[in-house]
Length: 494
Ligand code: ADP
Image 1 (cartoon, rainbow, N blue to C red):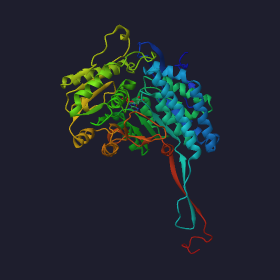
Image 2 (cartoon, protein in one colour):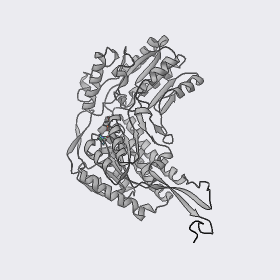
Image 3 (tube, protein in one colour):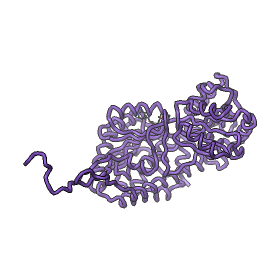
Image 4 (cartoon, helix red, strand yellow):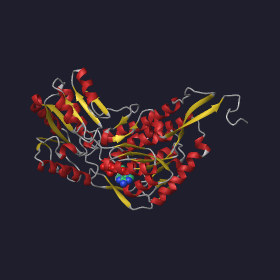
């Protein structure tokens, strides 16, 4: 089977597939360094054209007047199309991001499930009739914002795109999607499928290109009424400032340095399997990666050795090989950044328990590979323990008791996720409430449901993706007062 075909010299701009007028950028398969496509970026004039066409399409009666079940049907057809092309889409994403086929298949299934979920949610959302304090009927209604700017990162494109596009369309908007520079292919494929499935083409533009040019033009465009962003905290702050200037809402799903905690009474097999999955799946390129691994001091060495043995056994290789657990990093530049961060950890005094160097095996020589790496011996405030690495690197940290654990676990600017491994449900719930995080997993890790809101606290984000309420996040609330009194307002004396 071939990957989903995407003509790289065409991007969808306001309903028209045309050549991007910005610079070209190469999409490289990080498993072997091969250039798989050269995509033409959009330029700011195309952002403007897409925004104008999107704003027009959003108020076109052919879209605006669709009843919820009709719009829901359209989302269902997008889900059908994704499922129909699932294997091709997974292959395309594996080639463009390096993720294993097992992972990209799951992401494609998740994208289809997201469209189905918002289809169902749209049909069942209800308005409100707040109690009235006068002779009028009050209604609270929700209306589309118009044009939404969605900016997504390179780690899980089709799933993160769907989590923004599906609720935004369900809410009645047009979307300008800016995928990450290195990984636009599956986003372009998604637009092609959505248009073929009947989504009015001007409602979904995909505008690849550099964030500081194309993303910036989207964020500042006067017709863009909401920003939905997933990416790094530094970019989140930039976009937050623009949103503040423009007084438009923004949701941000940002970075993390999530603690995963083993309690003394944990089932060790379960904890080790879950921790390895939590930090090393997707080669650690996951905002929720459990990258700070807290072990009770009394059982520290025993648990550390189990984790090291498990990490060392994970097979590194291309994402297309079913035996691979650790695919390449998404780009060579990112692999080098991860390697540099491990070198800095060494300078900080870290002990490398496993991994820690670019593999020298001939079969891995052409790809952006880095092995699963565990470190320890660092103080909790070392840069390595505080900064997001976004690669297959976990740091082991001992703790003495529950208070010490909570203090250490919360001593970070981030607050995205947490894992707790214990047989004691009271302790699990107690800890879950004390840890500052948007999501806490108890005796599991990195499990998701589209129906469950996903958010970060502190520098990890603002607002939530997923869940029924996400549709409301792409709408404006309006209050309607319908007079029921039979007499005029007794004020002017007329
Ligand atoms: P990561 O560190 O995960 O690459 P980034 O925040 O750099 O995260 O990128 C996430 C998305 O934000 C990408 O699509 C990127 O092009 C975009 N982006 C980066 N800088 C800006 C910016 N100044 N304005 C708008 N979008 C940006």
